[in-house]
Image (cartoon, rainbow over all chains, first blue to last red; front, side):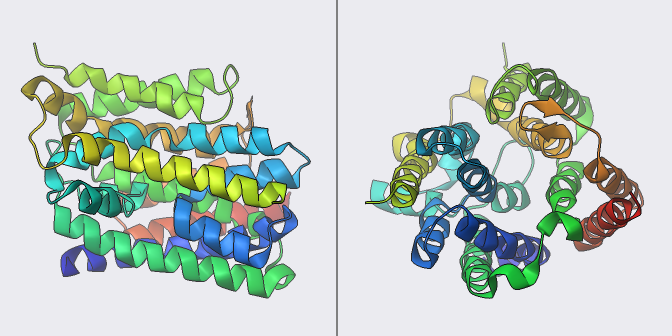
Length: 212
Length: 102
């Protein structure tokens, strides 16, 4: 668990750097301070929250905002299946521990070959959860002092973070092929499907690993 | 209840259910052997898709902007085996500088 917390520490800095502007954006989208923090504490999925808040902030409807966020989070079904063998205990404990799974905690606790370390998942998840909720609250409070997150290059920070995590995940030809195919599917679908769908559809590329 | 609270409640409940589905249904048990190979490839596949969409998508439009420059610089840092935090910092700084220069 400590190992997971330690490995998540640098990621927590990036997550916090993203939580601050999310807090600002949430206020612009018409969420109250309390609603913004509750959103981070319950949903705990940065990209979906940012997508939903941006839809509202740019004049979109609540239905469109909900749809964007739910589509983006649909990837947590296969992600949840991948960590399921590692999570033991009664169903409610498994459901609770599953809430700490986010892209970053999931990636650092991958032991290779589809095996996940439950304690590392817990340690990394707790550190990232604290970073996300606290930084949202600070962003809500500090408000406009922070300015436009894009000006600070924060919109490039997350894909770069995922790229660094990806580099640690690709082992062997199959992994590299799956990554290339997944990226290509997502790229092809960006202009054709609403946000969220390309990522979920790209997950189909991992069927390459189906064993006869 | 305002629209904002409806959003928070619906997305919150939906996400909790999406995250819990797999562990509640098959928690603590081994996956069928045929699926193990599939799950092993899930991390590289989804991470690659997230890199592509977060770098090049602007809604449903493909764009090459300061983000792409930042991520390209981050890729160089990854190739040089820089630590994760350095990769993220390089990407953010380059994206910010490109945006400033434009």
